[in-house]
Length: 226
Length: 267
Image 1 (spheres, rainbow over the protein chains, first blue to last red):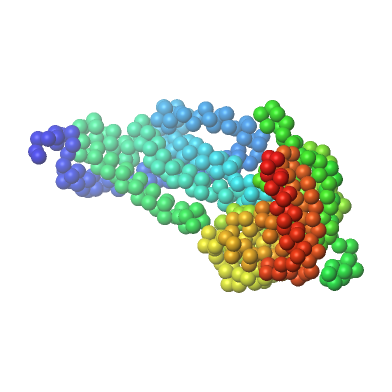
Image 2 (cartoon, rainbow over the protein chains, first blue to last red):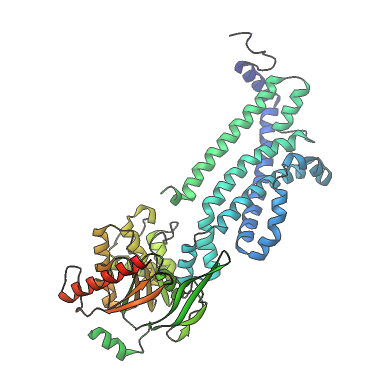
């Protein structure tokens, strides 16, 4: 089997393990993980909150929908990586530019799903709610929001995955720490083993977070599985 | 019958529905489609009326108009003297299916209807549990609709609709999706509850026997455009049960069959 792949390009798992322990001893493994997690978390929470808020507004308030739908539809195709240079000009190379990029990506995904869910509430639910005498605010919180919840939750799950994608976009340009930065830095030294450490970190972390999300969402929107 | 007389003595009976030349026209791809030809009818307080007719005859359109879901093109509908302008808790609606909120438990669904009243949460809970007992679902309060059978769900739906204390109860084929056995027990439940409460009921069905067992009066509708082609008074004594069949029942049954068949052939 030896000689099939060039070990300089695809290092053996043992070599990757060794690189990981080297990074661990240097201290960068955990500090990169911490800083990247923090960036994703901050961006995710900001983006998720704004996305749910805007999604509910654009879906349920017609004038707001008319005003914001065209803008959001033009923003949607713009990927975070294309915005990275602009983010640096606007916010500098510090943390705010990273937060901005991640927030932006998560926001769009969550907004789109929330908007879809909240604007496709079954007519029967709305009719039932109104003929049972529910006031508008009660219809909103007790009918529209739960009816849209499965879509909101799947938007959040997608948003969490996208937070990692845009995290790397943000860290590849103008960063001096984080998993994405470490991959970029390793490229300059042709350390593919260290690059793989970064990829494995991203893969494991993303997978773990998605798994947690799935478990939580099964409980939150339990009636979807019923 | 005596129950009705007492109710009239106590207070002006509520649940009086007056439909005057109600007409509904939809615009569809630039063409006007008459969903409901001008219809006039009255539902007397405390009466049980069925609407029967082929699919697409406008039964549901008429019901949705009385419920305030669909605006009239012309004419008027009044419930207890006031014009219907939108959904109101005075007019309760029970749908065919999928109308319970799946995110609330059976009790939560009923409490949703009770929240329009000034009640403490403990009172609301008690009232909801009582309502569940009334429809034969004692102990099922913490079940979600997804955990209940079709028949149980419709029992919860009935309890929820009644919990808002409507004066008029509109039922759009509420037992249409149930199997024959469940349907019979639901009819008996409904008859029992109606005979004590005497809420005005308008009941839509495809099922001739269901209409004959439940109703004081049956309107037979035909399609294109939806209109009422016959009115049948059912005078069999109450309380009724599904098993009791008399000569009048058989005569009415064959009359309705003929009407529905000719309405179907015409279509």
